[in-house]
Image (cartoon, rainbow, N blue to C red; front, side):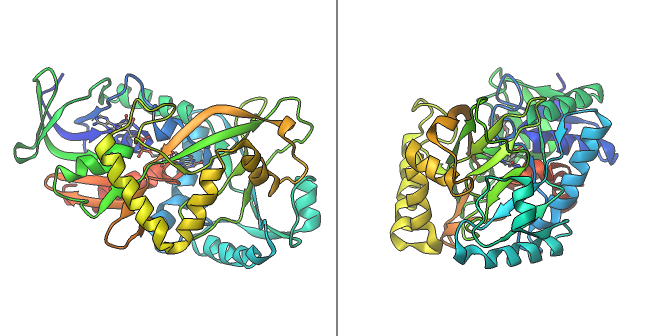
Length: 405
Ligand SMILES: Cc1cc2nc3c(=O)[nH]c(=O)nc-3n(C[C@H](O)[C@H](O)[C@H](O)COP(=O)(O)OP(=O)(O)OC[C@H]3O[C@@H](n4cnc5c(N)ncnc54)[C@H](O)[C@@H]3O)c2cc1C
C-alpha cells in the first residue's frame, strides 16, 4: 500500500467510484486511494435504492440537481451500453392522486422542459393503454419516456473493476481511521499513515460528520429517513410494465410511494419506498446501530419542526409514519392502482436510508446537493436522490468546483 497519494476519496459508493473514474478519464490524477469501511461496495444508499434513472422533472431549474440529473442520466446509460449491463427502458408515468394536485402536472412539465428532459402530457386513453388499472383522477398524466431502471450493484461492480484495472487502490474494510487535518493525513487503525494532497469526502450518511472534522457543514445535521419496500406477488394478475409515480409533495425532498419494475429478466415490481424517521444512520433492521446522543438531538429537531408545522412537514411526517402499517401502506398503493388488494402484495427485504440533511439556519430539510470546500478537501453532502442517476456529472461538478484541480 502507498503511504502518500494525490487524492484520497472517502466512500466507495457510486459517487466515490465515479469521481475516481472521472479523475482518471480527464487526466487529472491517476494517484488515487478510495477508503471504504465495508467489506464490499454498495452496502449503503448506492446498493439500496429504487434503481431508477431519473429524467430530471422534479428539480428547480438552476439547482445542482437540475444541472447534473439529465446529463448524468445520459452518461450512465452510455456506461451501461458500453459495458453491456442491464437496463429496463420502461419510462415513467406521473399521476395526480387528487383533483387539487392536477395543476402540479403543469409545473413538473415546465420544470422538466427547462431542465432539458423529454416529457409530455398524456390523456386518460393513453394512460389506460399503458396501465389499465391506473387511477385516472383528472384525465391527465405526465409521461417521461427517458426514465429507466437499472441494477445499481451491477453498475458499481463494473466501475470497481475498471478502477482496479487503472491502478486505483480500493481499501475495503477500512474503518476507525483518524483524520489529522493539519498534516493532511489519515492514520489507519494499523497506525499506517496515508498522506494526501486532496481529500474528497463522499461518505453518504456519514459525510456531514466527516465534514465537521474540517470545521465545515456546521449548519447541517443528518435526519435519517428510512425507506421500506413492498412488492407485487408473482401470482398477482396486475401487470405493471412502466414506473408509476404520484405527483409528489414538492415541499419535501421525497417522491412518494411508487411502483417500479426492476431490470431483471422477469421484472419484479417494487412498491415504495416509505420515508419514515429512523434512529441511527445505518440502522436498517434493528436497534444495534443507534447512536443515542446524536439520534436524540436529531429527534428533538424533528419534533421542533413537526410542532412548527413548517413546509407541510407535520402532515408529511405524520402520514409517512403511518405507512409502517400494512393497511395504510396498501392505501398509498391504492392511490395509484385502486384495485390492488392486500393479497396482491408482500413485504420486500429491500430497505435503504437517505443521507437527508436538515438545515438548522433555514429551519428546513435541505433540498439540493451541497458541495463544500475545506482545508485540502471537498465534501459532498446531502447526496440524496437523484445522486445515483447523476453520479458521472456530479463527479465532474465536484472536480470543477474544487480549488485543487
Ligand atoms: C430508499 C432510496 C431510494 C433511492 N432511489 C433512487 C433512485 O431511484 N435513483 C437515484 O438516482 N437515486 C436514488 N436514491 C439515492 C441514491 O441511492 C444515493 O443518492 C446515492 O447512492 C448516493 O451515493 P453515495 O456514493 O454518495 O453514498 P453511499 O452509497 O452511501 O456511499 C457512501 C460510502 O461511504 C462509505 N463510508 C461511510 N463512512 C465511511 C468512513 N468513515 N470510512 C470509509 N468509508 C466510509 C460507506 O460505507 C458507503 O459505502 C435512493 C436512495 C434511497 C435511500
